[in-house]
Image 1 (cartoon, rainbow, N blue to C red):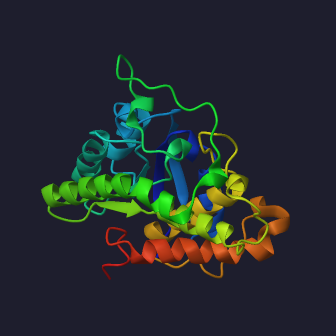
Image 2 (cartoon, one colour):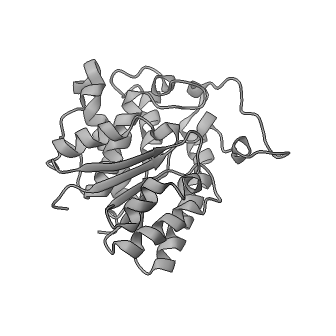
Length: 261
């Protein structure tokens, strides 16, 4: 990748504070012309809830978007395929990134996000530190598998890879394993990563999210980049680990566009 990308961001509240950090990382990586052309944030949203938004539709139809960032919660979510088709139709080099993230409340439970008789109230308390490496991998296995299958199917329909996975969730699991092992500088517990029971990210997670997206969008390792200013006092010790875990997750995921190369 030789130039900064024109990026439109869609997402829910896990994604809300993310774009300034991605911009900072992109510029520190040498992509001074990186541009966020639009943002659509809707709390608790699936991708389909952003469909029909006049700003994102106009930008894609005009061919003014190189990368559309999305982040589904659970499936089904027809928005991913709809946006992929629309963007690709108007820009043959268009890419859609789909963030596989960490599960809300440390559980796989789609019923928290539906209305009607199937709705299940989310837990009132969550002990993030009760999770083990094995339990985290087990609860995320189904989610990651479903998302990968969705991406593979869409790319098959389109005849080329248009949708790319950003494996943030996999990097988060690796970071939590490091915390459990006492090998994450400045992070004493898994709960240090989250601001609430739901799992909204604190700064270290948001920064690692930025590194994962940077790696997929620009097909470059973030290892060695200066720490974003948001990391503050823990930057020198923690930032290298965040970069390494992000790159390891991206470079090993078969749908990131990196591993296949």
